[in-house]
Length: 136
Image 1 (cartoon, rainbow, N blue to C red):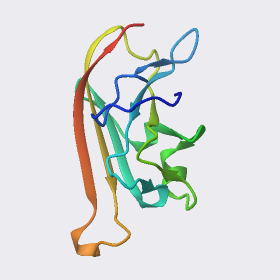
Image 2 (cartoon, rainbow, N blue to C red):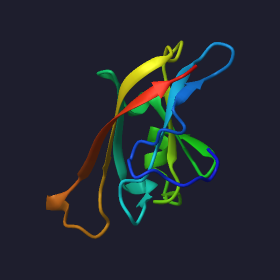
Image 3 (tube, one colour):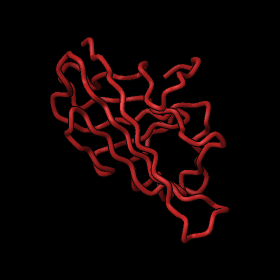
Image 4 (cartoon, rainbow, N blue to C red):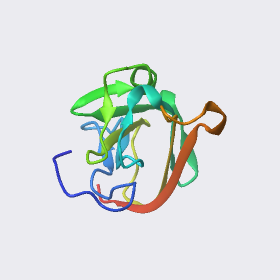
């Protein structure tokens, strides 16, 4: 995804679409970091993407940050990767055939720990939903 002005919503309209040619192997959605300071990848604990109620967990999701793609497990174990507030992560979900054109209710849930908050008060989960249109 090229550098652009971010939308206020966590789930960005730009970046939603199928991946893989000629037959889609999945779809992707761009997500703005939910914390204004950004999040170190090693503090991420969980991710989930839902499309019209169909859930996709971390094992089905790859993250692209700074032009580098990671599977969720590898990203969560990486100590030197940061998800900056001003750079959306591109979440790619493995789903053979991708999604048909149409209107979708897309949800994203990201769970992370804070490096400076007591363990008893953790983790934090940001859950958000948005209607998105897939054109092709």
